Image (tube, rainbow, N blue to C red; front, side, top):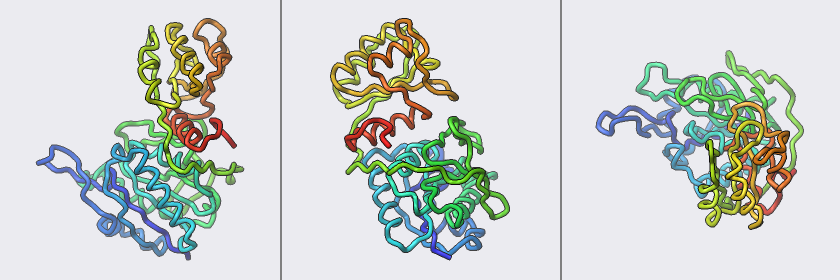
Length: 318
């Protein structure tokens, strides 16, 4: 059985409650977490790397890219059969999207974390860690790329999203659904691996992409303020892609400047469908040159635009 590489980055799974600090703080490194998950030794041989001990909100573009490069190095070493990453849940979806979109799919990469700390009676960290290792070690995971294993469910890296701020069952895939389940030490996939496009491979995450949510009566002020410092923008529209008429001129100014505008929806399910031709309607905005986000949440659309702009290829390039 091939070795599983356990790469620890921090997050709630590494935390406990510190009364002096007034809340949860990162404490546990990889060895401590492994010792707290005794079932891990029954899954596969493993090795531990303490890459970081950070909350997810501290992982900016530079650190995300450094993590991506480390994962690539490990995957290409020929020494491991799978990689498990422990990660803060707040931005698991951005990291999973980045890795799945930019890395070769041959060696499975499985991201997990926890919604409870080791101070909590219902700490979910050990179970999630063992489940993630189970997925990474399975022969049926080869070629599936990056996935997220959480609360017994497996999602693809480009579809997973955090959908609950505090619940222990915090993840879903609004545009796709889960691809597998983990139970009794086995992963069962619900569908065969999907056909995959070639990874997009920028040299780094250099593009700066804004994300601006529309509000009732929006006049485009925030869109205009964001434009000078960013190369592209994801507009979080209403419904199937509609925006207030007052924001349309600001969108036009982005497009006139040669900066892409991706139109996402604030709705948790469904995607932008340019049906409405009134002023501010999605059909009119798309006709101006805005790009529908496709089957992506706003955060996924922003990561997609960041990756593709950084690589100098069109949004959604295959």
